Length: 191
Length: 388
Image 1 (tube, each protein chain N blue to C red):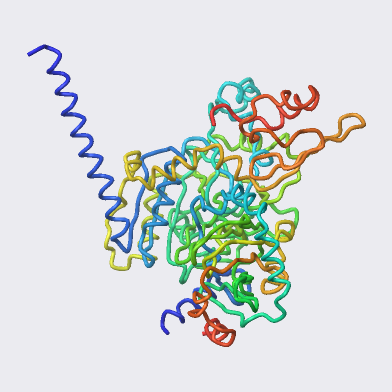
Image 2: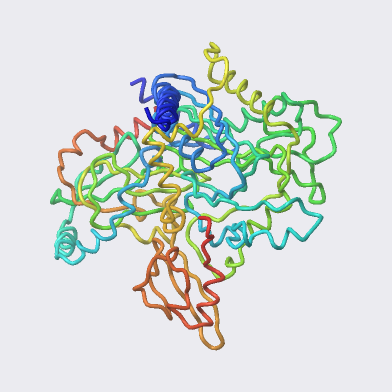
């Protein structure tokens, strides 16, 4: 529990001291990377485009009427699996987005990128800080929210809705088991 | 024994000795970085690519609960933020030693020409800055827990005030400025790093001069804060020329635009500044005073493969140019409007050009791909410095 307390304190302290004391810090998504693979996967993406995989995945997504429970990470990302359990939508939490401050740029993953849990799938810049966006689960990126490229500030406005970051075909849904539910996450961030 | 063998053997012996020296130096950096909770370094090198790579290595390899100080001074260079556009931010035509100094060399009111100036894209966010030998870069890498964007700027302000620079404070952009107003009678020297007795009120009052600009790189557990600090640059009057791009009016870009500020020199020597920053770092993080002095690092650290890898990557044209966020460049030619959108360094769509072209930074002559008018114009606007 001590570790969690310290993370929450870190979250609060990340904000500029000039800003009013509001919720702060984020983190997984605030990560850096070094020449991440997601920057170089355009060719693989093109290959994927040619197959019917993506269309199939789309149909699968559209067919799912009810989503499963939304899960949260200690690094302040969220992921929501569709009913089939195969495709997850992920983004950063409201808590994280206020910790970042005003987002001015977002770099999204290319389609077809294969990742493991904890890998960088993109990056954001806010208040002179470069930070990576991490994925909570492994799999293949099947869609990115291109609207954010023109309106990165939406990440501050509606991070858990319209400003989702990417959709991922989840390799092993069991990876979600260790994540927090909504109540648990709220408790985690209020500590 | 042939006479040539002697010198050869001597040469071999020398080589072996220097390799041993290198090993001793870089092994010590590699061991220290993972082992110590408090670490301080200065660099003997003025190579901006190397210093940024050492810094990145320290960020990635140091223990999550450690605090690191790193001080370095680069040869003249322009450093853009991770998500910036070099064609928008920099007058690339001035960077070549051969051509870049024509305008200023004839002007006797300006200092001697700078010669070749490196162009670098760093890994942290923020805007474009100019470095030279009168500028000291300071870096603090610390745990995310307890980090704020002002914490280390405040540390450096304490160092500056200890050296008698009582006009220094941290401003609302997390930069360090020197206030230029008259000393207020009421105010004494404050312990608050965000106010000084020289803060001016009213729109006619002299504006503070920026002396130190900050940028950050955040990882899961670590926060890197690095900043410039202008002590005695002889080139302040040249900086606007270098940072004024002729292409800017024609480019609409995603990504991060620089905020320009009037800058000034603090007017102190490098050595006492470095010492004062080290002492404030010790006061902040090293209560037991476990270290007496900073450790020197230099070009031998390229023997560490992670540093070499980062160094090579920073020097690639792909990192410098293809990393540029998407942008559109357009201009009217008579009744015709030329437009081209560039993504990941390649043409994504264009009114006049085929997208089957090399990456922008690989094109030597645009007239191969466009009409003479458009080609000549693009050659001027999108030129790549030959020393890059």
